[in-house]
Image (cartoon, rainbow, N blue to C red):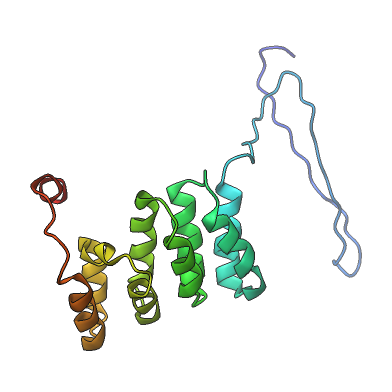
Length: 173
C-alpha cells in the first residue's frame, strides 16, 4: 500500500456489565515511521514535575527541587519554573539559599520570584546581595506588596550602593 493514505485506529471495546474494566493497548514499530514521538530528554519533564509538586502541595519534594535549582547546567527557564514552584509552596528560604551562590544571570530570575511575596522579599533582603533590590522588576514587586517596613528596609540596604553605570541605565531603558 505504498503511497496510499491509511487510517489506523485502536479501540478498547471491552464491554463488561460493570463498565469498570479497561485494556492497555499499544502500537509501535511502524515502518516507515509515520508517527514521531517527542523526546523526553529535555528539561520539560522536570518543569512539569516541579509544577505538579507545587499544585499538589508535595512538600516532601522540596529538597529535590532545591537540589535541581542549585545544579549547574539547568536552563534559566527551568530554574524559574522550579523557583516559582518553591515560592508557591511558601519556601523562600530554599530559593534564597540557592540565590547566594548562583550566577548573576540566575540571581536576577530568583530575585524576581522572591520579590513577589512578603516572606520572599524578606528572604531576598537577608541574602546579602542588595544590588538585586535595585533591579526594576524586583523593586516594583516589593513596592506592590504595600508593606512600608519592607520598602524602608530595601531603601536602607541600597542607599550606599554606587549608582548604576550609564551603560547599565542604557540597557534598562
